[in-house]
Length: 283
Length: 283
Image: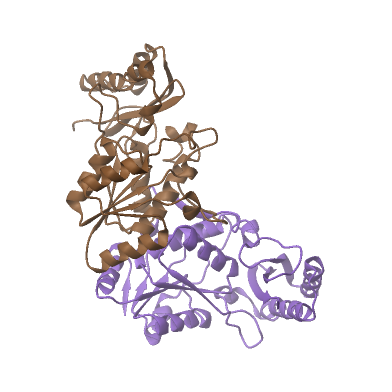
């Protein structure tokens, strides 16, 4: 397994594979890999001749006052995990390599980026789309793998690929959870023991929402209110949003119809956690 | 020569060439081809195995009240000209093919897009960058050819390619002029006889500026004033801007140093014409 830090070397390596007719799967990450990332890598490994993992804590997707500096990093351990999974190449650039002096170009998916996380993180998805565009150009993947945990990100990247005619198949993979239901996230390491226990409220609230949906509740206001009430029972939890949106457009819906996303963002102490649930009505 | 209207057919055709190891040159146009376009096609023909010309009057680069509807179109004549030059494929999509329902993704080069033409046409270059990104993904060119007449567009596309790590070499080609100096442009057809004569003032003013530069004038304010005065002698001419900027950043400079661009936009009647001159100081 190679670890490369420059765009040029990485392009060169991957172009040689492509010339030889090999398919490439890309797993874009910010590192500090957990079982969620590993599930993406395993799927990529199954479906492609070569697997590239990018490890880059992307500054343009962090807002002012967010956790860019403190975001956990451990390249050595990440490399061991990738090696064990049979990854062929880790792309691990510096911020200066990705954003050289005079960098001025941004890719943005309007509308879809403005709801949910986009409300409290107004430039977040612009940063995501910009770095993902770059990674797609650098790694020229046939397939790229994203976790369903970041459901809005997945919907936005899919829309970007369709709108800009990228030659990449975007594949969403299921949320991987701890045994008590907490969605795996590199940010879970921020939680102390008490906060860690409190954090299970996100998944519990979603399960409660799912129960109501399965019982036939279709009123969005009512559902959101009930899910909020579940979260508010936890004293350490501060709700950023609880919202039901259309699964493709990420826009609020008045009524549960077709495929919807129940999305939530909750602060436990200073740590902002997200989780979600997809639900399709039977028709 | 094939004329294809869908993204999928065009990708399929070009992917087969790429698989066979053939290089592709792309000439993006809005059609109504003149000798300026033909010079780009001829250069592309020399440097690539296959040449693709896109003909698409791109709605996202027109502002409200601009000439989207009246922009001249003549696919039949364009096809004859392309055929005669040995073009392999014309990509001629509909607006609906390029911008399907729910299209929300835009590419923007900030800063460089905000000066010169970007001032009077604030969303113009965002439209250009978006459509050029799409064309690059569809045609997967090794090289793409743009005229130096649209100097700001060329600088912006080059920056976009660098910033987003596109695998395309962007090649700028010299301005082609009528015998009286007027830069070739599809919009010249809007001019009546009297306006057509008046339009030569753009090139005359640039030549006057060049004379002053060669005589050693380095004061930007002075140069801009002298060039404006030349244009103001023509009663049919209304200046949009006369500006000297850094040739790479498109930002105003206080003094002529290294490589600069003298850029101007002038209205003759309702027709907005642009022209420019690159100048490099000897050092």
